[in-house]
Image 1 (spheres, helix red, strand yellow):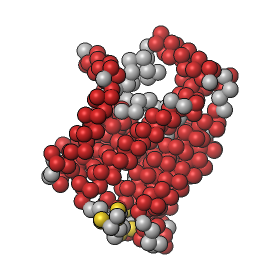
Image 2 (cartoon, rainbow, N blue to C red):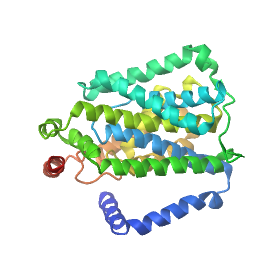
Image 3 (cartoon, rainbow, N blue to C red):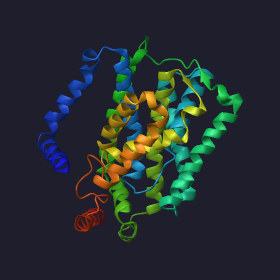
Length: 340
């Protein structure tokens, strides 16, 4: 019954997409007016931040079928790059944010090279190890990263002489980053590059037979997902004004992964739904923070049993478990790749 409700809502959205999008944008722009409480705005900022971060992981896991569980490592690189450029070299936030994204993207490319032949749990273990290696480097490279003490006093961004501070101001930064991510990603997924990612996810051998260069597509996919993780990390650093290696532990990586699974892999809106639910759960159960991952685990198990494609995943998703719909989906996607 609930699954049918989600499908009906998606049909209504597709039918009235333009009107609904305009209404949503207006609501998002006036939320600070409707919710002036700084605590509530802080929750909304975290939802937007994690939504884009989970979306960047979804690009890798959901659209190319690779299994990355070390996304916190890319998140860390973006945050530390911006923090070091801003505090040590006096860079402005805006160019530092772009550089953070580029540096993280390059690291994503380097990580992808030795993992091109790996799949499933083997790829997951490599990305998990990468995340921990990056965190340990940040913990011990005291001269650059501040070591266990981290980096303090990260300056706030400035725009036309106006210093951005407080949840209300940062809300608009996270909102703009999220909208840009959705817009650019949507365009890429409709291009030949995006279709090659999806074809690899559905059937890599069939994709190769149609001329898709799988290794190049996988590397590009990792780079793109890592780029946005770096951008989010760069906005995260000045928002909290302090970063340390213990903010990017394995728990953080699993937290991001949980958001993708709950919302729905292979969907643009899924990570935003998952980020909202996960962030609200963490707030409601703040008194039991040490058991938060247990709650996530239970929720993921329930999702895998009840709706494996996620809350907003399509009923004919590759994760839905329907053999007939899966065959139809593979056929349609390989035909699209072949036509292009």
